[in-house]
Image (tube, rainbow, N blue to C red; front, side, top):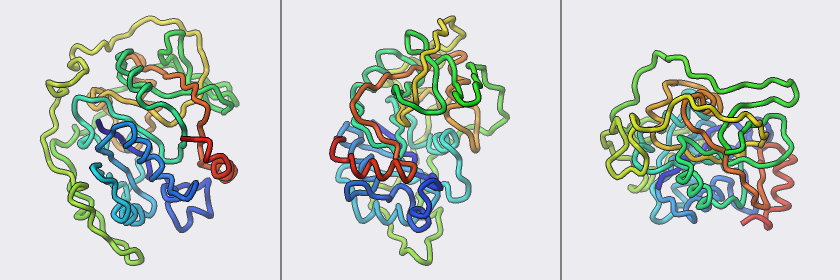
Length: 307
């Protein structure tokens, strides 16, 4: 199974910590956030992981080189030229993520004891194009769900704005590339301050052809059989907060027409107008977003409580 870790953010809320180090390498419990997420993914049985980078990319490359994960294939999706947000980042990494299995997506600044196996089982049972882990917690922005946990909207509690699923406009964009990008060693200049280390052989992507449809062994229905049509559902508007952990079916790479910089939440609202997008109500005891100084301090204090 494959996964993607969003590690390209600038970490501006953690400044001045992120003035000299990427957010992904900020430590909690004596280990970088990136390592904590990677270990959680590996423990869930994931053996191939894409990591996107933008801020101090060579520091992340050097760390991965010096701290390998045996049996795990890592790929670097380099966004040094342009930070692409979550949607653009996922689509840029699509050539590595295509296949027949669902893809787990995890923010690097989230620490939790969410059961990834249970999330994946729920995703497969519901059969949606995406499943978003959500929780009951205080925040400004909420995702809205009906009683079947199908996505029905997005709400800003402060402004009162509510957005409903709307079909995407047709974006005049080129198709996804038919081969994987060149390996990061040949596409990114090394930093003069940080020595550039070649990644181990297991981390260099190959160049398989990308099928236009899921592979025969896929557990998902072919695109033309996927239940993507406008379906009435009750807008009971259960508000739940997004946890920064989600699962996407590979069919989304064919359904999303956007390219460049865009938010995945926007894409999910567009998809939800015609395809099932679900929420997984995570009731595990601990979840931490460590994107702010006070949150990071709390995470460091509470770290021992989280598996």
